[in-house]
Length: 275
Figure 1 (cartoon, helix red, strand yellow):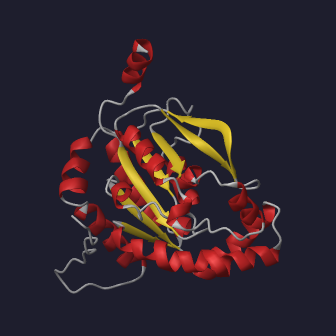
Figure 2 (figure 1 turned 180 degrees about the horizontal axis):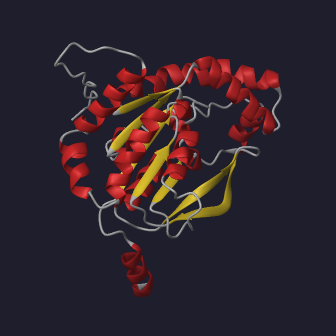
């Protein structure tokens, strides 16, 4: 046990990891945005033990279903978009271990059989961790752990079309997909996911197509990876990342052709926070 603890201690980063939450509706492009950030940082081909950036999905934390729940899931009658569908305690514990620089093992979920597999994925300490999912901002104690919160805002018709294509590749028929969407997915998005948009530090319209926002986020992460840790400790925690938000806002205004009054700078309003 002492050897394992010593190994874990040796593998910990020199500073507290920068934890980024990425939320948005189903098929909004959350994982694609995370993958693009990883690619632009040149981390996608780095060995997983040596990566400075890691991506973890909330999907890994779906609860183990009872036989009755699994039977409903196979018929498209189980609500996977409800907060209670996730093991929030395991999710919180895992993120807490990540923030403390520990090696963690994350469950693997099979969406075809709707079951948690025996195989687990090992994540080693990283400087930056992206945690993405539809309800990552819903539990307050999880939400409060993030140093930066991103919300991928994509048109509902686009999300539905992506969802249909994705679920059909998983062997489901169109009628079941549409029924599940209207019964569970859309109502859950409006009740649980969309209201958490107010907690986002940065909202990314159009997802991965919005390279202005993504490039600014990547630059901010590069500052952290280059050792400017004091910058995010002062700005992103104590100052709620206002300078970073202002840069995002001004770049978006330029892209959209907005004209500001002379001498006036447009600021992105700070998110509503419970603390």
